[in-house]
Image (tube, rainbow, N blue to C red; front, side, top):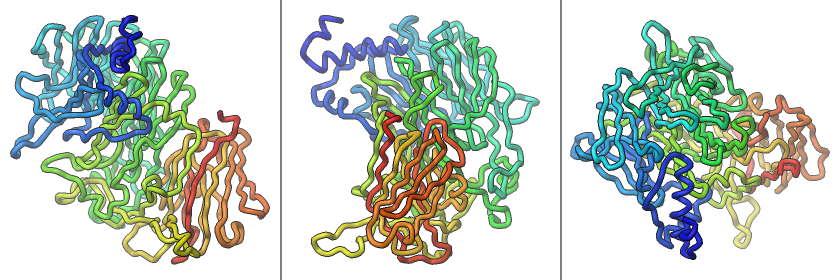
Length: 608
């Protein structure tokens, strides 16, 4: 190996890196050799980018690296009106993919390979969404896996795991328990390479019941504790994060390899209402967390929603999702005690679509659409593959470099329009699960901000700016136009905003999570929120600055030569501020509004 690595050819060196790296992660790649062009393409991957579409999928994701280094993601495909098992496959570390149908002699599900035991183990089901469920086992040299039926029903199971500290395979999943109320996070455990399995359930669960939260006028869909994500910490402890219907995720811990669990414990530093977490331990021990760091809109009263049926009114089904338009990422170097990043991993490209409910469906597939639900796979040299999203238009495979999470600064000049901000308003479209052929639990949208010509420009100086106005529009539910912008989390820093206020001005807020641009309670949900008017900012083009310090709990707003305005933080986010939230101050129509040309974030030196 040493002799090979000392050769000059980059592609040969990468093969050696793959061999060494993937042996430590429990997966060995034997034959991956990148061409010079692919090597260059691979090295260029940094910020998240789409590398392919996913085949039709459901809540149970299956992705793996084969013993020879090929990567597969399994799903479904409609062929001549028939639903066929299919997968996408890459033989160059996720750079390029091919869609293939799974034949009768092909593997039907992702299998995790253990190079020490020289065996692959996987879990699959006979029918979509239903059992019976079975385990697949295949030793080196075998071409057809051995199938063993399982006496368990697995709801929303995720990737099979192989523990480092003991000879044990583990499958996280959701389950119901006969005679007990609600959903529970659980794991299947096998200590004999998949020959036999037993179940361990994390108890107790937590329930929102029919309680009302925040400004809700309708109960939330109660998900109890479900869709668990698990990572093995450096001391062998298993850390399980679960989906709930509260504002924050909850977690359990196991110190005996999953046999018993303690918890659940709230995670107040993260926002994750009714969405699925993603958790991955990297080969160097760092933890990678993907989740929707978002807060939903207040739920409307039943009298405003005549289309809802009984289940949707009493917390047994969903009315509408308003917090699934952005997926976030963070990384921890100390087993989850502290976190870095809080970056927008991906923004829903359809988030401003006026026909959001109807867009992107195919025959007989899931009508969910969002950028939640994720599955991760570590690649060599710090690259990560992420399968995420629901619905044909949003289910994608992404690749990025974990170094991206360590960026400290960010600047937005709207050179790509409004791609990097969120600004939609919600249309008075249908709420609830399935209504005819359209998607479920989704609202159509209209833009709250547009790109327009800057005022006071000529042929030489003409440019465009993001224009925020408020109009009397009977089509929208919460008519509070605004925008949100994400930056690397910092406990102390400064935001500079290039703007020109022509109308009533805007409210400027800082937050540690994504808040809907039109949220009527954004001011109280932000950590700090201050008004910015022509009186405070002056006329013409100006730079508004807001600085914050979580340690002393203060923020300071400064506009030109005007005296600074000091404001206390309502709370001090443990891992810092990561969002600026801007919303029109107008209480009536304001067609002059405010123009924005630039957003820039710089952390204080103490954060470096």
